[in-house]
Length: 383
Image 1 (cartoon, rainbow, N blue to C red):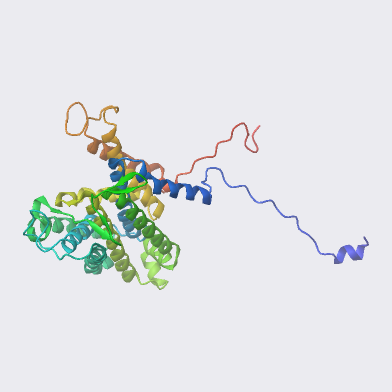
Image 2: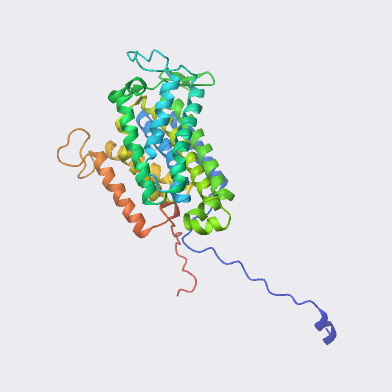
């Protein structure tokens, strides 16, 4: 090639090889792994006994509520300690709307409207959102510990109403939860044989809870990945800067508080259907603290973290109860001799988990990275 040709020929730059993925990251699961996991979840009611299915239902209901709280606290930075109040609103609203006017069984003096189950669920979620909307002007203006103290007041107000409004709530003893009826299927204890497996209320509710959790997770994920999610993160990181950029801070805070309340209301309905009886003591401050522990352990601002944290906090007492005979320092429920009760031991453990996550894994369990195993292959640069 002549000097003239070499001067006019285009210069081809060498293409650098793509940088290897940094060690210690999760790889995106393959589609067939997600398919296998979905098939496993759908097949569990055919193989697990009722106690484990109930534990799974508790975890799914808690995951829905934790997703709503993570939108509020993790993504927007609003501390809420009154999440249990909105679960109670959803649970008791469903009972009142779905029960007959004369009550169920011996509960003849309780108020009920006798609405169809699916309509009662939708209205209960809407009422929870209305309750959050009534509080949203306060949520839109307060932040930090001030908002946490204000939402904590909801717990005391809710407990007072639940114990004293006996015509609506049944007082200290609570009230029976009417079974759900959806698309002609009654989610009660009447047996329906499917592939030689008797399906009762727990097995039927399993698929309803799975569908509800999937829809709630996808909706929350879409919000976080879109423009509202970016605005929420901007409010969390720097409220004044977000306002300067044109983000309506007060409106976003109020809207997220309403959405979080609706998530909690749906979770309350599912918990009521699983328990089959609402009791005021359950919807106390301890439950709100457990939800805060869920989102901290799983990961703030992450839908996956909310699900992981909810599964950890919800299933831990069940595991300790089931295997209390084999665990040291843990006694069987109700004995109180020679060890710690499973529920109390579970609180100690996930309390320690909160401290460990804050100190060593600020992103929560959802950000946990595992280094890939290298069998017999030295790393690059090593001798």
